[in-house]
Amino acid sequence: MKFFAAASIAATFVGVAHAHAVEFGLWVDGKDMGAGKGTYYRAPPSNSPVKDLTSNDVMCNVGGTTAVSGTVSIPTGSAVSSEWFHDNRNDDIIDGSHKGPIVAYLAPADVKPGDASWVKIAEDGFDGTNWAVTNLIANGGKYDFTMPAGLAAGDYLLRVEILALHESDTLFSENSARGIQLYAACNQITVTGSGSTSLPAGVAFPGAYKDSDAGIHFNLYNADPKTYVIPGPAVWDGASSGSAPATSAATTSVAATTSAAATTSAAQTSAAAPTTSAAAPTTSAAAPASSSSAAAPASSAVPTTRVVTTSNAPATSKPVPTSSTAAQPTSGSGQVDANVCMNSYNKCIAQSQPNPDWTGCEATRTACLSNATYNFNMSQRARRDGKFGRLL
Image 1 (cartoon, rainbow, N blue to C red):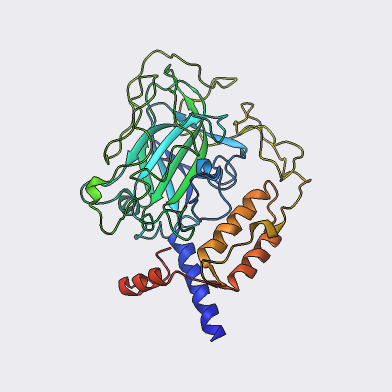
Image 2: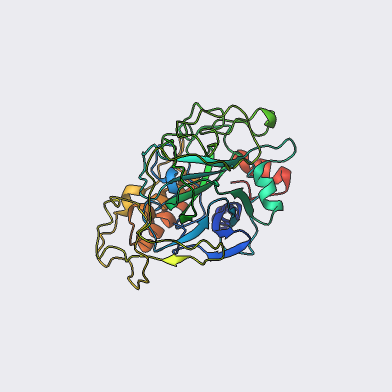
C-alpha cells in the first residue's frame, strides 16, 4: 500500500513537470539568439507556474527581479519569436490541456514589482478555432509578434506570458491547489533604431490581474471560449503616450507599428547599438560583489555598460530557513495537496536567491511529499481523457 501511494505521487509529479513550460530563448527576424537562461533571460529555477496574483513573482516568475549578464539587440519593427519548451529545446512544448492566451509586454529595464510600467504590445486568445497555446504547440513552441516600429532606442524588459486556464474555474485564493497558472518569461533586450516614441504609462505586476477579472476566473470546460476576455490592458497602438484602455474581448495577435514624437524619456544606452538583427546577445557589467538572500535587489535594471564579466554568484548568502515554506495540510485531513508541496518548494528557492538553498528546499519538499496526496477530481478526469498525470 505504501509503495502504491508513493508511486502515485511520483507519477503525479512526473506529469506535473512534463505539463509545464519555460522559455528557451528568442528569435529576431528569423535568427536564433541562442539559449537565454542566465544570459538575457531571467530563468526561474523550475518550470512550475506562479498562481498567487499578489506575489512579486507574477512580474517575472520566481527569482525574476535579479538581472542577468546580457541583453539581446532587437531593431524596432523586427519580427520576434519567443520559443518555449518543457525544460530544454526538443522537449515537448507544453501539455495540450493547458489552453489559454499568450501575451507580450514591455517595460523600462529598471522596472520593479508594483511599478505601473508594463505596456502590452501583443496578445493572442481564442481565434475562433484554437487557443493561443494550441497554436504555440503547432508552431513548434514559438510565439510570434512584432517589436513596435517607432519605439525609442534603449534598454527594456520583454515579458512574454502563457496563461493556462485548465484550473481557472476555481480561484487560487479559494483553493491553493487550483487557480489560473501564469508562466512569465522576462528577457533583457536593447532596442535599436531611430524611433522616438516612448512607452506610455502602463500597468503593474503584481496588480494588473485580480480575482474579479473575467479572464482570471474562467471555466475552460463549460464557458464559450469566444466570450473569453484576455486580462490586462489593451494592446498599445505604438503611437499614443496615454494610458491604454482595458481589453473587451479576445483578439488575435496585435503589434504596434506606428510612431510619434516622444513625450516621456526612455532608457538610453551609453553607446550606439548595432542595427542588424543578426547580432548575438551581448554581455554586460558584473554582478554585485556580495548580497544577502534575505533581501531583494533594489533595482532590476539591465546594466548599460556592456563588457564581458567572469563574476560568479555572490559568495555570501544566508540560507532561508526551510521551515518557513512548509506546506499546510489541506482542509479536513492530515495530508497536503502535492501541488502545494511544489509551490512551497518554488517559494523556498526564490527566498534563498541569489544563492538558492537547493539542499534545504529539497529536504522540505521531500518531507512534504511523504504526506501528500493528489487532486482526486483531476486524476479522474485524467483517466477519462487518457492523460493521467499531465493535467496539473
